[in-house]
Length: 378
Image (cartoon, rainbow, N blue to C red; front, top):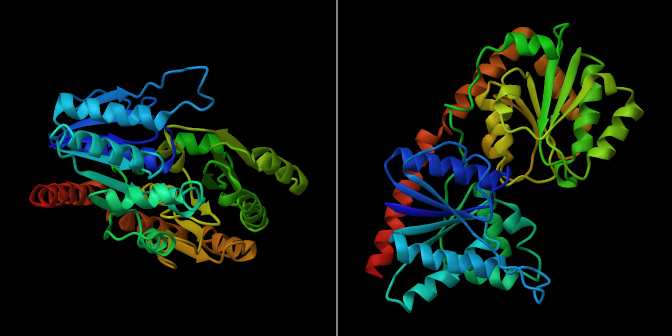
C-alpha cells in the first residue's frame, strides 16, 4: 500500500503514535508519506519506504493567520496525483480531518477516489473539538471520513456523546515499540541520580493544568516522608514556575529535578521505580504505557481511558482525580517493599507487552484494507 500520514510534528501523543506507526508500516514494505509543517520529532532515521513532505504556508500581509489548512489540502491533492496514494490517514481531527475531506472532494473532480481515515487522540474531541467555533466542521469532517478510529473506548464514547457522528468508530489502542521502550540495565545511571539507593519517582507531561502537575509534587512530598526517594520531572510548559514554587514551599527542592523536554524518555524511565499520572483527563495515557514498557508501575487518576490501560492492583493503582492522599498511600505501598515493587514491575512489563506495536500495527493494516475495500465497492 501507499499510505499518506498527516500529523503534528511535536512530541505530543498524536505525533508520536503517527510517526511510530509510519515506521512500522514502512518495515512491512508499505510506502509511507508523511505530511506536516515540520519533520516529525521521531522521524529521525532513514528508511527507504518513508518520505517526508513539508507543508509550506505562503506569507502574505493580508493574512493575519496563515491558512495552514488550505496549504495542507493543496499538498494532499498534489501528493495523491503524483504518487497514487491508496489511503490518507490523518491523526488529530483539527484541522487535519477537514483538510483531508476537502482534498478528497477536489480529487473527485479529477476522477480520483481517495479514502480518508481519521484517528481521534483526545483533546481534538474532548477539549478543542467541543469549542463552538470548530464543532460544525469537526462533525462534518468525521462523518465524511471513510473510517474513524479512536485510541480508547472512553474516547469513542465521548465522541458519540459530544458529536452527531453517524459513522462507526473502531477502537485501536495506542502502542509502544519494544525495540525502543524496554528496560535495559543502566545501574551506573541510576546510581548517579540516586547515590544512596533512593527510589526514583517520575512524571512526564507538557506541564499544563489538565495534567494536575502540582498534584505530582504534593504526592511525591508525602511519599518521601515515608520512603527515601527522588522525583524526576520530564517536560515543560506553563505550569513549571508554579511547580518550582510548590517545591520551594514544601522544602523538597533538593530531591526534585526538572529535566526539561527529553527525546529519549526511555533512558530515564528505565531507571525509575514509580510513574505518577494524576491527570484531570486522559483519553488513553500513552506516557503511562511507555513507563510500564520499561517495568515502571503506575499510580494514576481514574479518568478517561486510563483505567483501560492501568489495571488497578496489578500494574499499579487507580485513584480518584485530586485524591493526593490516596495516591501517596498507594505509591508508598508499592515502593516500601522490595519484593512487592519487583512484582509490580514484572506485572507492568507483561501487561505492556499486549500493546506492542507488533500486536497493534496489524490492526491498522487490516483496517486500511477494510476501508479501501468498502470505498471501492461503494
